[in-house]
Image (cartoon, rainbow, N blue to C red; front, top):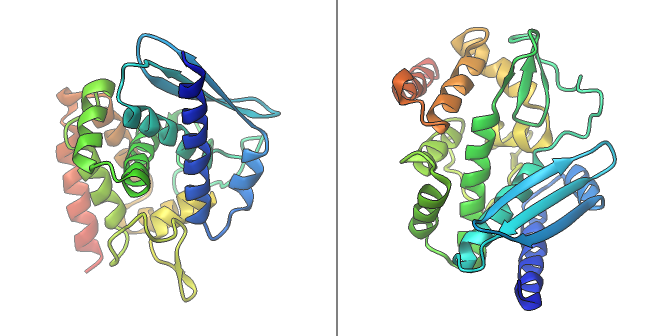
Length: 255
């Protein structure tokens, strides 16, 4: 791989990092992770990214097919940086415990219940996809439709994933989400969007408790399991139908 290509991707990495930092009111936790993150770029037969974590540090691995469009490599880069944003700094894995589903935080979105079952992986990937697309569109003026098309074709993502993620985020605020605003936006003494605020600040137990108080104990976990089935293209379970019905039920409960 050409040295200039690697330098260009490294530059984009730090541009995206600075953009995300500019969208945070509370920068402390993310900034502390950036101090111990290493970027590794290699060439391969297809473009992919992976965030690796040890007790001491993080590594963002980017494997790039040089013939892929540059904006696709930027999207993959942004996706992994958002995974870093949602990482937990708690080594003991007992943080942000939630009584309504007896879970604790593995990351800001992924959780582990009392039986040791993990849930939320698919949802976290969907959120990272959505925010990465918004970020690359805002930073480099790449059309959202082009980015979602590449994501679906190259990463085999489900049709309509971007729109469904956007619908989920906007379910929890009267104000439509925009990447132009702060990710952890506060209006007065309240979060503009409780879902976004809690996943960014690492206190999602507050959100889950609120959600389950309307929908019933354990229902956030059930919704996350349906997102997982949808994300993994397990259409035999018809997860999209359940998700849409849950959205409608939540909206009815708010009236």
